[in-house]
Image 1 (cartoon, helix red, strand yellow):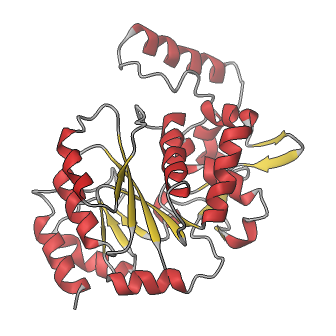
Image 2 (image 1 turned 120 degrees about the horizontal axis):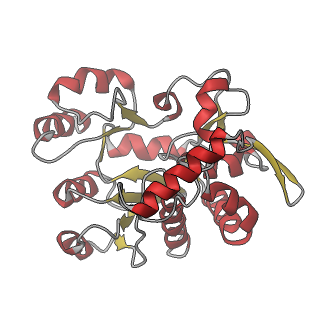
Image 3 (image 1 turned 30 degrees about the vertical axis):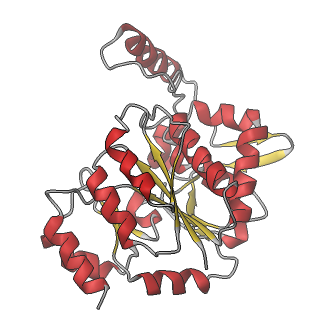
Length: 299
């Protein structure tokens, strides 16, 4: 069982080094460092032969197609670097709660199941409002308060104000798509990864749809997968959308009101969650928690 961890990072190289040491010894690590970040503190990671720092770095902007772009670069690098049974997306501020033996056993027993959860957004009412807004010019790194950014915001508000809505179902190249939402953290087969990457490279109309979408890093892969032959292998969430944490099958995240930096006081909740990973943990704040996790997971 050979695992590839696809890691997005922009800060805390000390924690990232600790994260890599905590994961299975025979795993491979494909790491994207945001192009806005000074990469120098991360270069020492290359001493580990398992580490692949992506040479093509994306200027990541929250909620934009640039987040999908770095996801696709991670998939591309992993698929071209070897044969892996699972490609697992985590952040550089994650940490494993399970032992490595348990992680490997879990993925060994999955069969063809995809750890990719999604919920259809076409019937979600108010919870889907953000996905009905066109996010024009979202891929440009304009600073808040700048004239171009003010123009972008005004255009988005004007479009929505006059009643123009982004469709949550649409037909492209003979395929009827329904929009599905999930999380950025998943574990998929190389077959699904190759299918998604092919769509990114060849289906320009689909990429164009998501270039004006809200948080496409949580919808692009899910929408492709759930409107494909892989749908039956994925994890469909029925009913109404409640929270992003309900769509994150492997990772414990406290989202309220923003993502919490976890400390030792969160240990009981982490243990009870049964999740494989937790997020987010930060050097200097989460150290005692990480030490506790190391003791508990390696018993």
